[in-house]
Image (cartoon, rainbow, N blue to C red; front, side, top):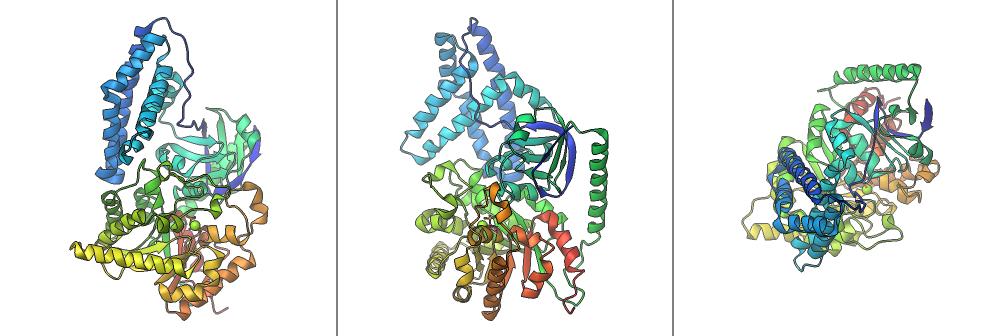
Length: 544
Ligand code: PEP
Ligand code: MG
C-alpha cells in the first residue's frame, strides 16, 4: 500500500479502481503498413462505432440539454459521413502506406485548417468539430480505448489537472471520485466536483501522478485528502466504515427536508443552491433548496464550440425556471476568462488572467454577445421567478452601463412585441474588494448583492485561487474578508436591498452564525450542502 496526501475538496469517501484521465487530444504516430485493405477495414469499423457513439451522445444531449444544443451531434454524424473527408483518409492510407490513425490525424489537420481559414464565423467554428470527430475515430482505432469503452464499471478518475470543460464532459455515472495531482481547492474544477457530489482530492502531487496506473485499487478520503494505492484490508475496512457513517448522516439529514431554515430564536434565512448545468436541478430539488442562488451560465458557453444562440440560451433558461416552479432562480451572466476559456472567444493570452479580461469586462466590451444573453434571459423571465446577477463588478460606471444595456434590451423586446417581465430583479456580485468598499454607492442602483467569496478571497488576500502553493497563505476566515462582507451587508440593508453569499464560504458551517449575526439574508451552496447548512442554522441561538 502506498499513501499520498492532497487536499480534500468534497467530504465523502470512495473505494474502487483507478482510471487515468486521457486528454481528448490524441497523438497518432505514423507507422508504415503493408496491407492497405486491412487498414481501411479497421477504419470502416472505427467509423461505424463512432457513428453509434455519436448517436448515443445525441440522445443523451436531447434529454439533458434540449434539441437545439443536441444539433451539433447531427452535424458530427454528417461530417463523419462526408465523402471528401473519407476519401482523403483513404487516399493517404493508399498513397503513403501509413496506418489509419495517422491518415485520420493528417486529414483532421487539413480540414481543420481549411475551416479555420473561412470568412464565415460559423464555418470557422467547425474546425473544432472536425478535430472532435477525428479524435473519436483515432480513439476507436486504438485498442486501448476500445477496452475502456467496454467497461461500465465506476472508476476513480486521476489526472494531472482537469479543466472545467473537461470535468463537465466526464460521464458522472462512471465517476466514483476525482484525484488531481495539481489544482487548488477554489478552482472551478473543485467547485464542479462539489456540485457533482463526488469525493474529490486535489493537489496530490507529481509523485502520486508517477505512481498511479490504470486499474489499480484505491481508497480516497475526501475529508482528509488521503489517498491509498493498493490499500491493505484494514484501510479498506476503515474507508468502508466511513462510507456507512456518511450514508447514515445523509439519512438523518433527509429528515430535515421540508423544514424551515430557522434559528432557535426564530431568525430565518434562505438557503439556495449553486448550479452550472440544467441536469444539476434534480440535486437542487432532492436537497430541498429554497431556490437557485447562482446559475453559472458560462458552462453553457464552455460546452459549446461556438457562441450559444439566443434560442439555445432561451430554452436552457426557460427549462431551469420551469423546473423550479416559481422558486427564485438567480442566473449570473457570462463569467468567462481566467480559468474558464472557450477558444471561439479568441481571448488574448494574458500574464495575469485572473486580473485580466474576464466576465463583465468582456460583456461590456462586446455588447453584442451580452445583449444576446440578456434578450434570452428576459424572454425566459415569464416562465418563473428570475433574477439576473452580474459578476466581477468594480465600479459604479460599470453598473450604470449594465443598467442602460438592460433597459435597451427591454425596449427592443417591447418593440418586437415579445413578452417579458419588466421587474426582473437585477443584482451585482460583491467579489472584488472594490465592490465591497463602494457597496454604499452600488446598493442604491440594484435590487440585491451576492457575495462571491471565492474571488473576494483571492483578490483581497492577493492569492491566486488556482495556485496550490498558496493554500497556507489563504485564510478564508481572514478578518479582512469578514469585514468586507459585513460592510456590504450594512450598506445593502441601509438601502433596503437583500444580500446573499454564493461563494464556497457560504457552506462553511463554522461561519454560519457569524453570517446570521451580520444579517445575511441568503446563503447559496452546492446542492449537497443545503441540508448541512439547514441543520447548522437550526442549532443556533442568536440571543446567546
Ligand atoms: C465567487 O467568486 O465566489 C463565485 C461564486 O464565482 P465563481 O466561483 O464562479 O468565480
Ligand atoms: Mg467569481
